[in-house]
Image 1 (cartoon, rainbow, N blue to C red):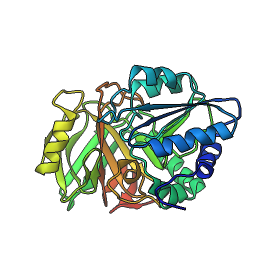
Image 2: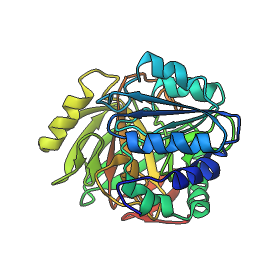
Image 3: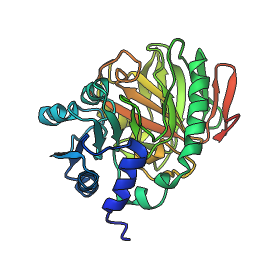
Length: 321
């Protein structure tokens, strides 16, 4: 089987196992010109399974978190099952939120490519990924604060998660309104706005930028990103823009997929077991209060993390999970 082609047989497995697509249901696939091969395979597989399948192809949105065109958004809210294999993420958009609010089962696949299907995170033991994710979600939901130590131990970031429920993306979206990424494996939360303070060293990758040639140091004050070192840091700031909303510390997540790798594609990178990710911008679709029109993840390898009273990561190794 060519790594350059996603077969309808494999796409059928995703639709049946991860989204429980049934004959007669409305399947909507939102793809773009860079991910057409995957979107078309999912559309064909859905039609073979007897779904009322619709394929909508858009131009790449060019920014994670940017709303899709109105016509695509209108199709999304009509879906029973919605898949979004796109170059840039539509996960944290109002269009996706409206679809799940109306009961759609949704899998977003930002940056997906054929290699993820044949080797890597799709091949994980998803029952084990689900177990790890649910355990971490439980720990997060019962805690009031988080402490992250990164770099050589000299970068410390703290923030409140009091009153914020942990979320889990297990890769299985079987109930009405369930949604997450494919490939999957993360527990995440929206930190309380205005509470994050300190520094974090990002040493793996950044969404829209890719793999880092060297680590960058981010300085955060009163819940906002105020400074980022290096060339990649300058690109991050430029991509986010300079509004308070776009600089908001939006998300803290922990990867739980032991088959995921660091490749420069954020969809896979942030799922790697033992990594964490800190995102900036919009968090209104998963428990936060900020609408920004942008959501950019940064991935950190090897951190120490304490959630409430529980140490969950030591130099990137998952503990008590």
